[in-house]
Image (tube, rainbow, N blue to C red):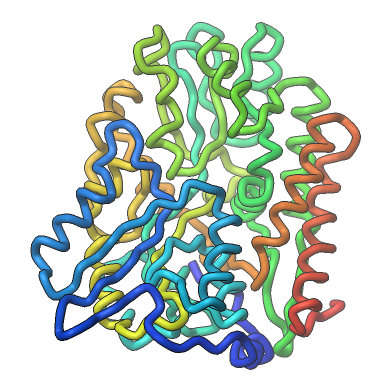
Amino acid sequence: MAVTGMLSAAALVLSACGPTVGGASGISQSGGGAIKIEYVHRLPDGSGATPVAEIVKKWNDAHPDSQVTATRFTGKASALMTKLESDVKNNSAPCLAQVGYGEAPGLFVKNLLEDVSGEAAKYKDNYTAAYSQMSVGGKMVGLPQDTGPLVYLYNEAEFNALGIAVPTTFDELLEAAKKAAAQGKYILNFEPDEAGDWLSAQAAAAGAVWYSTVDNKWKVNTTDEKTQSVAKFWQDVLDAQAALTNKRADSAYEQALTSGSLIGNIAPAWEIGNALDKLDGTPYEGQWRVAKLPTFGGAKLTGPDGGSGVAVMKGCQHKAEAMEFANWFNTQVADLASHGLLPAAKDAVATPEKTLRQFGNQDVYQVLTEANGELPSDWGYIPGFSTVTPKMEEKADEVAAGSAKVADIFTVAEETSKQTLKESGLPVTDG
């Protein structure tokens, strides 16, 4: 799971031109007292989850000389990245922050993250291949927390009633979606507000490699043949009116779920923890199951939709202590799984009680673990990928409204990727 497709030397040089910060960012120590570390996260703390404050209390009770305060950021990930940049410049950033794998390269190039390679190496053996997702240009900026392989969620009882088998290929998924739609049911939802990470992950599952380097220059190709197969699939689905087009964060999505019209969907592993909360206490509770993502062209791959690590922000003066906590926190696999996460740590994960109830006693984490092993090894992100996804989502809104084609989303991704790199002063090959 190599992350950034190798940052060019120019990218690393640029990082030296970023803001210079002094003082102790997010961490303090006075009069020989305890070191105080702030950790900013976006974990949901939802129903059935072990509260982050409770997890952190276990650390604090056992480490009187290193006390951690966990602060939950309730906005979108993009808003947190903007805030962290401002905080670093103002020397008021937390020492540790939850950072998406697609966001880490851009933050590092802006000189907002510390190089903690030496400390990270101490904990490498605790993690799966996701360890390299927190590597930018060969430098570790933190430790991985969770991964987000795409899987397929479906209502088993409804599928049986419709006479639909669980699709194993995207061709089968298309035909099943048409059959279900003809009976007023939908086994897919096209999600405009998730299009950036969601569709790029599907391209990865098809075997595409969007970003690579040639002769120390970035090569961008988000419109290759494999990506076009994803575009064609969704265009065929939409043309057949065989999918809903509700935004994932919109109440219309939940209404479709609770009314029983939406009976299947493609989702990242981290969504498992709260995807079915609205079905608790309804006739649909316990009817849903998880399957691996259907394959494009027979390749047994899934794609990474999200997933994040704990990064050390620029200016942290006690990096060793911060990394010790980050490793401890990221290896609390049972607690993290209670939030619906698929931990990046190697420890085996038992399916939480809540998940067992919602998915009919299926050993969901066994499926997720298998999917984790089918993530592509050559997929990575460019610095500034977080500026690409909003543009993809804007175009996806047009697709949902019928004024654009799915292929246009990937064209916008290519144009925005190249523009973002060039505006950052990074070389881009025209080949």
